[in-house]
Image 1 (cartoon, helix red, strand yellow):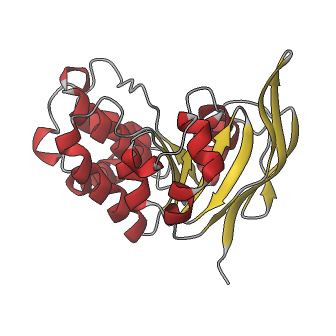
Image 2: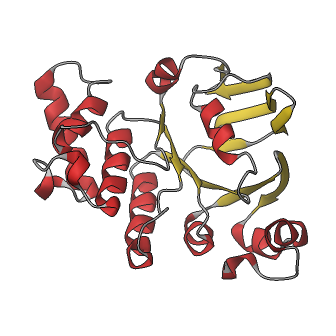
Amino acid sequence: MSEILLETRNVTKRFGGLIANEDINIHVNKGEVLGIIGANGAGKTTLFSMLAGALPVTSGEILFKGIPIQNMKSSRVCKLGIGRTFQIVQPFTNLSVLDNVIVGAFLRHPKYADALRAAEQVLRFTGLYDIRDVPGDSLTLTQKKRMELAKAIATEPDILLLDEVTAGVNPTEHPVFMKLVTDIRDNGITVVIIEHVMRVIMNISDRMYVLNQGKLIAEGLPADIAKNPQVIKSYFGEKRNVENK
């Protein structure tokens, strides 16, 4: 039986009269790539923000390794082992690629020499080592996306939350990011990914959840999700295969 690392129990988030997430129950198994999809405004990033400690829950419970973490500060959640990337990358201004990643490495390695070694290892893994001395804010969008991943990996998480890692990236680069995500999983980091590019998320996810207007409407294997009538309707309002999106 798979070990559950992270789960939510009836998690709800309200912003005044707006319900962004309602009674969300999901679980993340150790060692998997879990995909979360949904149309714009479905509540995906809000859910990520609660999982990462950036937003308090209105009601419900979030358990990480059996520990309640709802409403815990994001710095504490990260220290426990949940890392996160953001759809809109924000490199540390005027810092090199290496120094950007060292900032993440300091979480586990307070001594500079140790953080440097850890950061260099992550840069080799993510293919950024050769441009480590380039200012982070001068990179291309694709390179910034890689650096965003590297910063999060450097915190040495048990679970990595990836928010639309291919957003804005040239489609020719999608296979590279797909391999990087599966390599992250193969190196012992469980991955939860939000993604709008169906060809990407369908091919890298072991399981998937689907949100629509703040509610969970489907769970299952990618092949089953792609043929689910309720999922298709939520995306297109007509009979069409989600994989073609």
